[in-house]
Image (cartoon, rainbow, N blue to C red; front, side, top):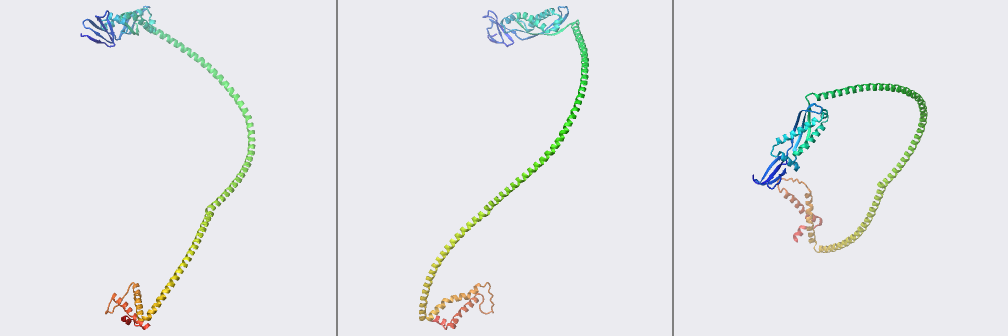
Length: 426
């Protein structure tokens, strides 16, 4: 073994003895440092042990043999150092089976002792008391060995002589007897109560019939009185109803007349409002637009009148100015024409034939244009040729020139002036 720390679980304890310790060091569920060769380490179990304690054929205080089986839970107390040290002195080096055997023997001895001091009835009827006594006595003895009794329970009680069975039979017979007596008493009491109930029921029925007859009589009397009163009230009610109906009809007629008056008044008011509305509508749709149109037309007429006056004035002024201008122009033109005519007359006097030639030459293009004018207005011209001479446009042009060539002859016949000669002379 090497030196160092040694650990153990919570269900065991370390016992270290040797150098440095005057008494063993106890370490329940922990660790400790040890020196090998000079210190020794041992382990003791702290597990809970279950013991089945069976005590067969034990005579009770009455001398009745019975057998009892109990179950106990025991363990070595590791939290109390003195108890743990006592357990180490007693059980160190022993295994768990040996420790269970020692505890089992001790518990069985105490269980047998308690059984001998009690009767069968006490053990059978008060198991809790028996278990408590065994627990207390065994605990006080086992604690000196470092063992704690965690719990003890009485599991079973039995006997070979049938004593417990006899106790059960006697108790069963007693219970059955009490049950039969109770059942008979209950049936008797039930019959008595049924008879009393029937008597009370019949009395109640008779009393009820009497009360019913009395109530029926009172009802018939009251009903007759009520019928008289009701008929009287009905007659009064009918008369009052007819009177009230007449009053109601009269009031309804009055109300209807009032309603008709109100309706007529409202109709008149509605008609007046309709008349006023139509007047306002007429005012809005006809009169005012007519007045507006009249005003507009008056303004337009006034404007037109002013415009016409101004136009007339302007036109008169323009006519006046135009007249003055035309008069001036006519006067100037007449003056110029007169001067021109005078000059022409003088020129004609001096150049009679030359003037005529000049005038002829001036009007000759006009004559040609007038001769050709009908031809320019014609859409279609049909020309018939005899087969000799020109045709087409040249023929038409020749016709126009032929007409123009005849003009000097016409002038000569009308004026006696031979234009051809004059032209050649010029």
